[in-house]
Image 1 (cartoon, rainbow, N blue to C red):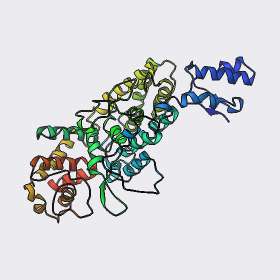
Image 2: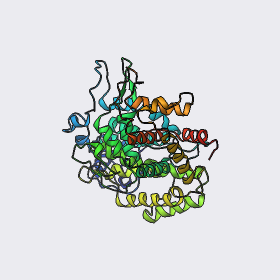
Image 3: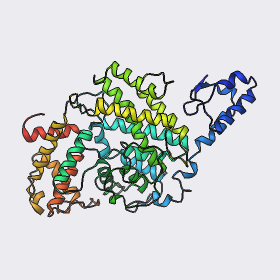
Image 4: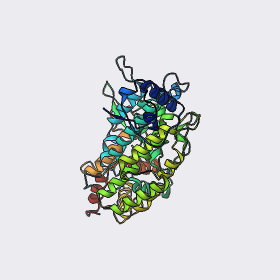
Length: 461
C-alpha cells in the first residue's frame, strides 16, 4: 500500500537510478537529512524503505530542545498561574491539558458556535462559524507542532482559546466596540486583549467544593491567546525572550508569543481561514468558478508547477507542508519565499473579493453598528451608580441577564458565598459600568445580539 509523504519532498530519480533497495534507502536518507529536496511530492512504498522513519526523525524532532516541556528553562514561567491551583492528588493531566479542558467546558467557548467567522448569516448552517474555525486552527497547530517536535498539548490549548474574545458579528462587531470604547474613554477594544480578559476574569468554573472560580490558565496559554494575531503578514517568526505582564500590552502584534507553540498557533490561524473562507464564499455564491480560475492563475504566476484546484484542501496542504520543510530554530517558523508570496496574494484576493464586500452580507456593517450601538446605549441608560443592581428589574430576561453579569463580577450584596471569582467592577465608578456593558456585549452571540436588539426596539434589522 502506498503511503503519501506530505511533509518531505524529494526526487523520484532514485527509484530509477538505484535498483538496489539498500542503496535507495541510503541515498534517500542522505537527501532528507541534508534537506536537499525537489519540489515534487510522490508516494512511497515503505516495504522498500525499511528505515525511512528513522531518516525522517531529524526533521520531526527539529524543535524538540526548544519545545515548552519540563526541560525548557522557561518552564516554570510558562506554567505559572494567577492563583494557586486547587489541590488534586489524582489529576493525571499536564498543565496544558488542564487548560484545554477548562477552555472547552467554558460558556464563552460554547458561544463561539453562534458567532460569525466571516459571513454573518445566522440562518445558514453550512457556513463556518467561529467555533468551526477554532477547531480547524487546533488541527493545523497540532499537525505542525507534532512534525516539528513541539508541545502539541500547549499548541492545542492556545488554539482552543485563541478566538474566545471575539465580539458578535466577527471583525465588524470588533470595529463597532472599538469605536464605542474610544468614544467613551475606555480601553480600546481589540479581540485578542478581550480574549485575555475573558479567560482571566469572566470564564468561570465550579471547583470540587462547588465554589465558582476563575479559570486560572497558565501563562503560556494566556500569552498565546493575546498574541495570536494572525492578520499580520510576517515570515520567519521567533518567540520573544521577555516574561512580561500581559495586561500591559496595548495593541495587537505588539510582541511575539513567548513560546514556539504560540508562534505555530499564530501562523495556523491564517492557514486555517484562507482556504476555508474561499470555500464558504463559493458555497453562498460570493465567489464563482471564474474567481477560482483567477485564484489558480494567481498561484501559478508564483508557482508555475502548481496544477491543483485552489480550495481549502490544496492550500492547507501547501502551507503546512512548506512550513514544516522550511522552519528551523535559526530561521524561525517560516514559509519558503514562493509560498509566502502565495499566502500574501491569496489573502489580498480574499480581502478584495470577500472581506471588504458589503453587498453580500445579510448583516451589513451598518446594521451591525446599529445593533451594537443600540444595545450599548440601552444598558448604559440604566446606570444608577452603586444602586444599579437594585434598580434593574428582574422580570425582563434581557435586563435580568445583564443584571446577573453585574452581580457576578462586581462588589455587591447579592453575591453568593460560593462566588470566589475576582471582582472586576466597582459600580460607583461610571466608567466601570460602561466597561461592564462592553464586556457583556462582547460575549454575546450573533443571535442573542439580534434578539436583544429586537426586544429593545420592537423591530428587526
